[in-house]
Length: 131
Image 1 (cartoon, rainbow, N blue to C red):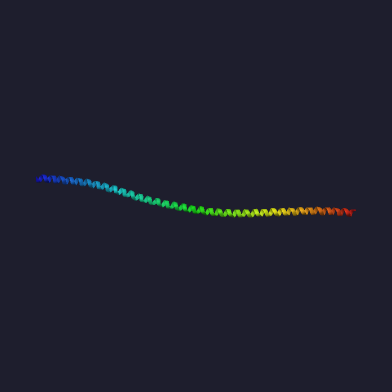
Image 2 (spheres, rainbow, N blue to C red):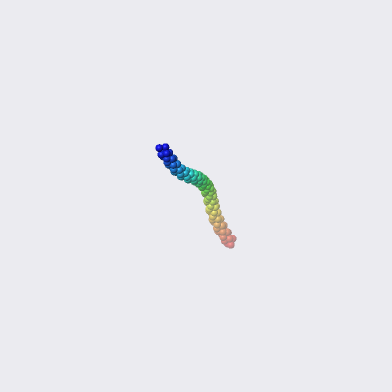
């Protein structure tokens, strides 16, 4: 009876050892899966960090471009104002020149009229002398 009992115990010990080996293998598999999951998580964290940096860079680039656009708008407004001022000055100068030309034309017409009158008087005087 002792030997049967011993055999049963040895059988139970062997079963426990086999089960322990199976559990050890299962534990190794779980550890391997955990390591893989940790590696994937670390990669995902790195990728997230890289994407966050790209987003930050894109936001900065957008901000820089908005600043450049605002600067260009300011330059364009200044240039437009300057060109309008120059155009107004040139338009005024043209109006002054046209007015001056008109005055000169009127003065020329007056001189022609006076010259005609003088010529007529000269003809009259010449005609009177000849008589």
